[in-house]
Length: 532
Image 1 (cartoon, rainbow, N blue to C red):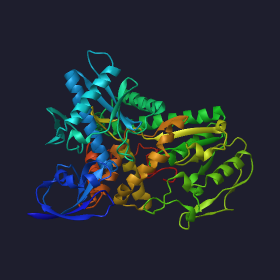
Image 2 (image 1 turned 90 degrees about the vertical axis):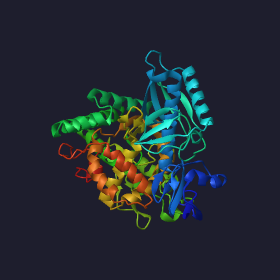
Image 3 (image 1 turned 180 degrees about the vertical axis):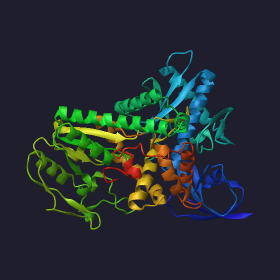
Image 4 (image 1 turned 135 degrees about the horizontal axis):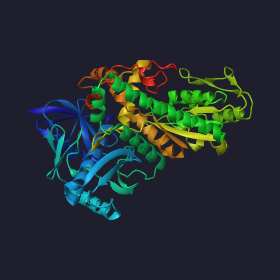
């Protein structure tokens, strides 16, 4: 039987109509396209649903080929790399070697290995593991889907949550690095799928993850199953987890406020990726500084400093790109900061997003003696944003939800999914945005973060981990109805299906009464004391 397939070489590309015999796999069809593709294809989407390359085409459909620039394909690569890593360790050290996949960091995945009867992992161990992994890649062995999330590679089986590459030959390039007693699995970033991402040691990010792990260990909450047991224990047990998580945030905010005052800093710069809770964090920090007897800080948002629309940069598709630093009037921003610090009256702009112009004369401001300026924006940690402002007056904070909870030893809870779920709930509630649009825009948001935010997190004086151990059980009841509205055939269906499955792993917390109005989570679910 002949079927018609509309083939897209990448998301957003012009399609080509094909007529083929039913029964071909996507991988078999892929052969004739390989030489015309910019990067290695990892997965595909058929009528909006994410599928492996082993998927059999048996009806008329739309087929989108996905390389690592697409989120689901990048995740599939990472799962394949993890399976490859675990298989190599099993081959070399047997069942005694216990591996824990801990967290995403430094454009890689941090892992630890407990050999049981052996010392910590050495450089020699690392090279042996890496050598074994490359042999498996060169053999191009099939990764078999055994059903129910179980995959088999050359006799080794393990469970994973999501798609896998069709074979080991797709898992390249990669590298292993010793780091803090563990191993960092490095792989390409989505923005450049053929090259290993730039390698740097993010000591402060690691410290933040370690602090989160210590907190979870103290509560005996290493895995989702542990959290579910606490929720099952009843409303009071769930409320206890909420109170402890919120107390931890409150204590950390008080500590930061005290540090800022004692250091005599005048400009607090706050940056972090989308849906980190920057707005609520900034407002809470202002209140904490004032509570210590200092003048209430002056909030200065960077959204009013966009260049006039006619000068706004555009991306390769001709659409306005508001994410880059060249979309910001840096000269005016720095001048206003310097005027405020020197005690002068500053005429601050008010940006009109409809007309794309700045208005003046509506916000003329002057600081009180000793008043701190709090700046929140995606470029706040980029030195070019405040290049002419003396470093000695600046206090830089990076904020992000650094989730340390695991599904099991080999499957982690991605911080990216936490941020996306937060964003879809907030944007639907406050702006009326559909979840389809939020998921569709997410790759563009993340691409901007990789250029404008993540490279500068090491500039921070302090890291604030905005994760809340209880948040996904609360967010579940808001997100699931929105995700269920996405139907088969829509281009976000595959991503929505993954998020629904991911959320199904959590027991819901229905009673929100223990969540305080100043909680960062209120920025997303509403009911907050800061107009959220």
